[in-house]
Length: 223
Image (cartoon, rainbow, N blue to C red):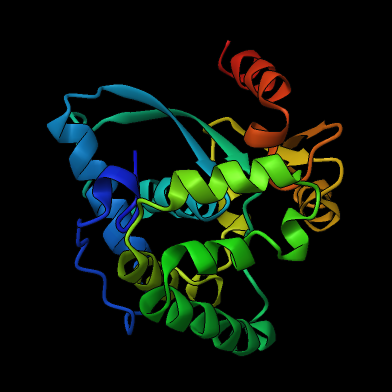
């Protein structure tokens, strides 16, 4: 399912209010739920990568906290997270927001291909091969730069609440995948108290770097 600004949702506007307490997280949660209902989904496993993992965390926490859910609502069976951050300490949020605003300005104003080339040069993507970087740039070049900018601003990590305490209390099975070469996120996962699988010879983008191992871990979790 493509997020606003991405792929087949490039021109979708989720009516995100960046000034809201939770930024665009609540808007995406409601849009996801509405899409599942419209599609007639009854039970589902939710899989999220990076930003998608953060939105998936918020979604499952919102489902648990919203008292308006009916028995007819789609039922989340399991949650798989790939390289998602649980939320920053308050003191770290302002510097992160400044960092994100720089990327937002570039995505909104500059040729998308140029920005993507620089995006995948960040240290978190250091384990990608040249071919993998080029393939990702080609794949994402049909996204909408202004849409990506809006999503980045509305769902910045700086606007995300600390979700780990809520995740730790949920009954729904949660599994976290991280690449062995992704030191930062392996450390986050190892101290989370969640069930974790570390995929060897992979960095932040496991499903691109080690698709067979990723699929095996996913199917094992679902089964």
